[in-house]
Amino acid sequence: MPSLSAHARGLPRSGIREIMDLAWAMDGPVIGLHVGEPSFATPAHVIEGARRAMAEGQTRYVSNAGIPELRTALAGKVARVSLADQGSSTRDRVKPRAPNPIRPS
Image (cartoon, one colour):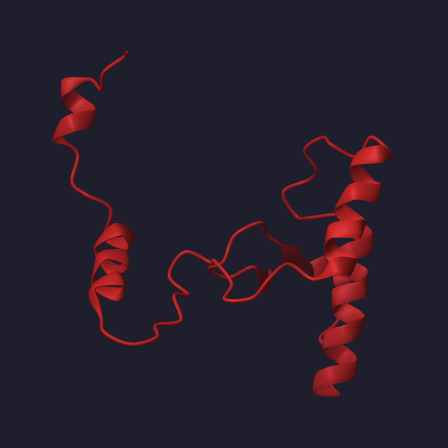
């Protein structure tokens, strides 16, 4: 089995791992938002959408800014929910991670 290089073994432990250890050591229910893991099951419509996208061959990387249709839909929802038009969806970015997933550029 391959082993880590001396350089990799000498790197400091990730701060997010320290937070995870603290959260997991706490008594009682803890809602862990530190790694973006939701505390609920994936909704059926999301599972079906992913299934459909894979069946249609949508399995490649996309632009770092996100899929244009998703950006437009999210900009519309933000405008409806906040009752404020945040500007063009071309300024918004959608990222596949928990910290700052939707952020105007």
